[in-house]
Image (tube, rainbow, N blue to C red):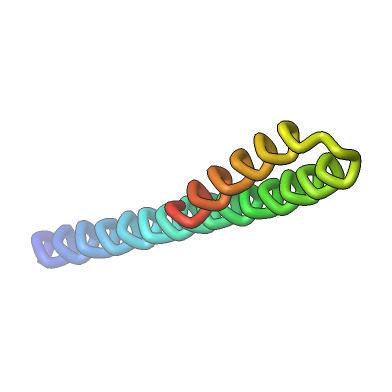
Length: 79
């Protein structure tokens, strides 16, 4: 009887531990997804800055900002 109770306790503990790991994994995935979304928004902001620089006649700055924005978008897509 004691062995059955011990086995049931171990099984319950294992399930609890698995549930915690799953919740932690899900939270980590949510954080990574949020980081990707933030990076994508930063890329949009950088693109807007590039448009402004182009309107002001600063072509070199506009090109540099567009390159930065493109790199941010690629990184966000990889996340």
